[in-house]
Image (cartoon, rainbow, N blue to C red; front, side, top):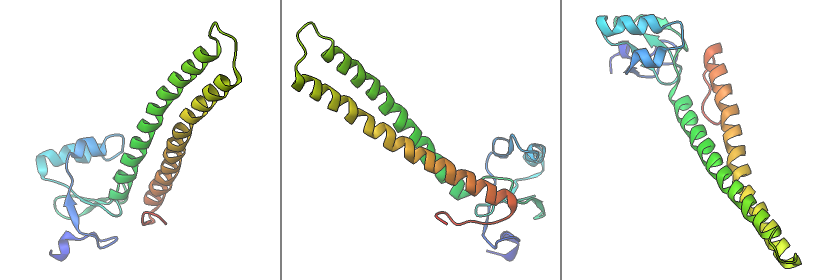
Length: 157
């Protein structure tokens, strides 16, 4: 690639910014994204989040979500979906435990132990995926803060 197709901040190759209006909404650069629909495509750096005009001038440093942030955000959404799915299973297990314990028959110790262990075991995946979603959210906040402050973090550091 020619040198003009590399980021001036980090040296990473530039890519065409797809869907500039959607990617730049909720930022102060949304109008630049609207103008790029008429003037030509903007370019982005996937590593540091810099945006360049079609002439190669730096429009904004760290204004767009990096590739690492996009992957981590997708992972966080998946973990939150799994957590919510297991929350439904936990509620169903709680209803089953309540039904087993409040039956018309006399309460047997073995039945109470089985019902309690089924209810407890149903909560384990809920807490596991909830923790994964929390950790991913924390890492995503760190990556976004580093991008906005001008530091380039590698994923996992």
